[in-house]
Image (cartoon, rainbow, N blue to C red; front, side, top):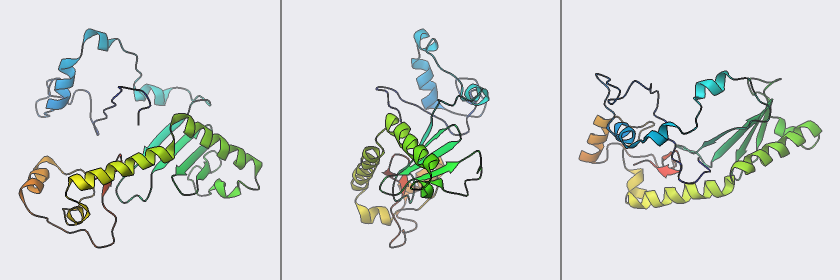
Amino acid sequence: MSQLPNLLVIIPDEHRKNAMGRAGHPIVKTPNLDALVARATAEDAGLPGVPLRAIAKASYKESRTGFSEYQDGGSKTGAFMVRWGMWKYLHYAGLRPQLFDLAGDPHEQADRAADGENDREAKAALAEGERRLRAICDPEEVNARAFADQRCRIEELGGEEACRTTYVFNRTPAPSEQDKLREGPALRPLPRGMPLPRVAGGRAAP
């Protein structure tokens, strides 16, 4: 989720820079990415940027905050994570947070959030995790927007019943599968009581 205006981040899944039609790849077709490249200007080439690989290989800075947001299929609420130093703080909108000491517990087996009342170190880390998170976003507001977006998408798709009786999948359908979805009737109903599908950003799956 970008906090800067007019900034669009596009991350192709498992995609190398030479796996593009414009890069001359003999098999891969990427018309949309090619169109973006075609619109680029010489000024764009001078914009600042750092490859993720370079960041990953650089020495770790204690002051740097790692951040991620998760809104996906079957999720009851949004999940937000910040990481700094040895701490990993997880915030769930409307639910209690989690806290892990990655130095002493790299496999995240012991939730230190439960110690927050009696352990000054854990209490301070919980407060710092929430401070760092809210410096990036308001998790409750972001979560509310995601669910509102989902509700709008459900209405666009014909309402809750239509979404419950549409094809169920747990991944992005391949182009050939998408064609079948457009052509035919509902292929497999969603079991009664199962939450509606959601994808990143809180949208219902089409």
